[in-house]
Amino acid sequence: MKADDIKISGANRAEYWLFVDKDLDSLNYKEHLEDKLKLSVSYKDITLRGVLFLWNPSLSVRKKLNYFDYTATYQKDPVNLLYGRFYTTFGRGLVLNQFLDEDFRNDNSLYGIKGDIKYFNSQLTLLSGQPRNIFFEENEYKIKNDTTDQIRGANFETNLIPKTTLGGRYVRVNRTVDLTPKAFTELYGGNIGLTCGPFESYFEYARQWGCHQVIGGRLKGTGLFFSAGFAITGLGISFQYLDYDTIGFGGPGYRYNEPPTPIKSGISVNRGIDEKGFGGTVVTTPIDMITGEFSYNEVKTDDKRNGVTEGIIKLISHPKDNTELTGGIERIDKDSIELGITEKIEFKPYLDATYDFGWIYVEAGYEHNFISADTSDYYEYAISFAIGKAEAFVLSLRYERRNRIPKWLVNKLGDETNWPMAELSLDLTNRHSLRIRVGAEKGGLVCSGGVCRFEAPFKGVKMVLTSIF
Amino acid sequence: MKKIALIFVLMLVLMVADESASLPDAPGFTLKNADGSEICLDYLLKKGPVLMSFWALWCKMCIKELDALRPYTNGFDSLNITLLAISQDKARSIPQVKPFAKSHKWEYEVLLDPENIMRDLYNVQVMPTFFIIDQNKKIVFTHQGYKPGDEKIIIEKLRELYGQGKKPEE
Figure 1: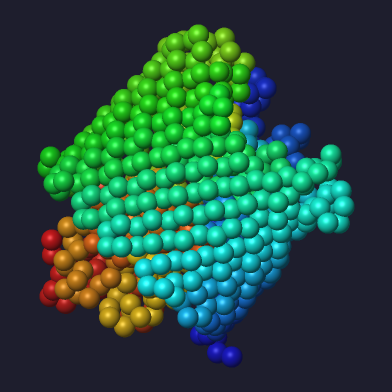
Figure 2: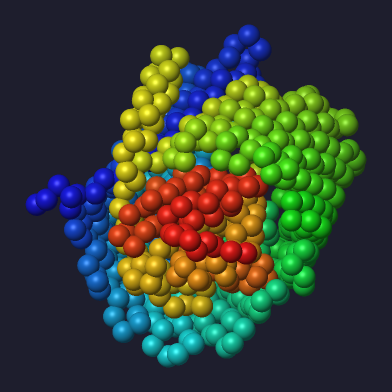
């Protein structure tokens, strides 16, 4: 064994917050310390990866979370074997979707064994593992599915027929809460994808055969997802249609599958339980200096009592090489999506301008959000300014204000109406960057990929140091 | 507070120490492109150096970076350089990736990485992150984040590494 054959690489992300907790007075500052160290060692076809995570909040009521995850992989074509913690998605996620969304701090993983074999333009995956969902909500990391559930699954995809993709998949979930040994849950389905010149389409169908927890009895569900696209240079059109009836499977706050939502801002109604919807997006660059994006998406329950409708218009223009103007309008209607609000409409026009002087660039932006929530009408606006230098720094200033606070909002987000914030982002070297943010954030509902969380208002300092080595 | 100081000091020491060390070898990979064909790093490196930019539909600065590099595409071809735009969009967003890339007139090879295997493999912490891989499979340049003007630094680095009189022209 030569030393040169062993390759080591890694990354680290250290994060520190000093803030005023919402339940405490301003003299009592609290801390949040988080570090994620990733190390990878490889020798020929074998790779060992480890992730050391430490979260240490200063509030005694919050339990700290420390863990060490590892993965051992053997990869030699056509075989790939893995033992340890891993992520995987079958098809578009109607049957199984265990993924890591690092930016949203949503970690859906499996711990177990996985094997892939590729042959004749086809791939077979077999896996067995225990799921774990670590989710960050209201300044706290929580394990959402603290269960002994076991997942076993198989996925097959083939491109044997030119311009055609065929797939089939099966997942079985064993739960200790199932009433009888036979009462496990199965999810299965298949897909077909076709490509013809600039056109492509994809259709996936899935079924769930499960059992009602505690009360027993069979539970059946179906899921259907269709997408189509058209792409030529300067023009892209995409369309999606979905119909889910009891296909979402997991627990009250987590899913082992996560069927797609067409809503770009990441909202779903009930994550695959009762949803019907569609979405269409057109993006075009007719001439090099202008790009336009137009999108309309909606998802609703069958009785149309709960739902989200979204419309987006965005234009980006480069009147000169060193100038960029971005303007747009976003409208989102939410029916019984946010807790305690029957109907909420947000209408947000915005404008952003960037000018590059060569040695330095400046950016200025304004957005205005008109909000109507049941009987309350109010608005929020934000003014932002940034100055930056390539490969050096960006200094951003942002001031956000709400004109008045409806009474129902005070209980959720407090009575603050001003949120000034300054952020300095520094490229320390090409491999290390530091971000320091000082000020206030208003909090509220934030969503990604159909998963939403309530983000608590924040007042304090955040520092993030990222490194790759 | 002591723990925080310790972690930050440790990171700074690590930073100064490792800056002089060479960057690691590029891990090999095979990924599907937006048309469904398999693309292998080893195969691309036989032709010339490989550039990689990690991007996603939701990442505004990633899109700005790839838009800013668009005028240099002809220059890349003349130096046998391949630019891979590696999409970190999850399976649910895949239908939108190809139409988006085409609509922005990107002539780059757009690769799909819905399980974010590449993000782990290359230890990507910030989006976008840019890599230059030479034909010896060594990572010779890494850059985290994007600010207007960063594309000129990338082009300058390419001239320094592979220019030899020629340069990626607009």
